[in-house]
Length: 298
Image (cartoon, rainbow, N blue to C red):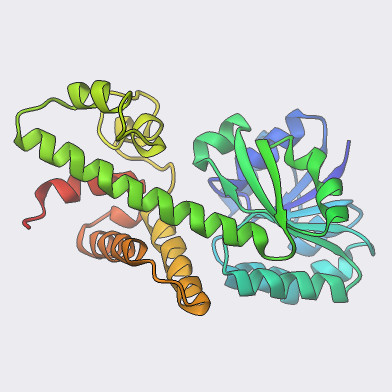
């Protein structure tokens, strides 16, 4: 079992750290929110007073923070690299820009550390159930050292390539999910106007060519799939503001790579408009856009 420092104990990080404790790992954690530290302690995580303290005398440091700005702040300004032993493995499970991920790798390497970018798919349900998918970028050595710990938090762990490759796969995945979700939402909106019930549409499409995970695994209307956020008043899940952030990353990367992604751009525009127009939307699950699609006048 490993000694792990965990930085970022929010909606995703808290259950991830708790699952490591359940697997027998020794985990100490830090978060800027006192409430998160209290909940972490209740889950068996040893609370510490700083990010640097979380990185001291451990084999692996995991960061799970909202944006690349926070990731780089941890690597550059929190004292973690000075507190950690040489050769400590740093795993960033946040979803950030590919360039920022590569910069984090460079900073860690210059300090004599191993590093991995390892963003996740699966949302809070996957974090709670330890069924996340980890998309990993970095050296083979770092990946193999990380694998036992990542397998304590997820069901699938994939080495996608060198530094930044995990983030590249993640932003492609989330762009595709957003596009699919908007198509599903439009399908339900049209079916309603044509007098078709949610359940009838689901029963047919979930076994037909229009099926997707956005329908059968993350259905955006209440009823057909009881475990989805739609049945909990769209409690996340995956917050709309985070999907908008990830879509912005996908569009930035598209421009840098010279690749046209018009459907990704449209998904970004729709979800950003929804987030800015509807009170409470940023913190709702992104599938709540179904209610917005239903009332938008074409």
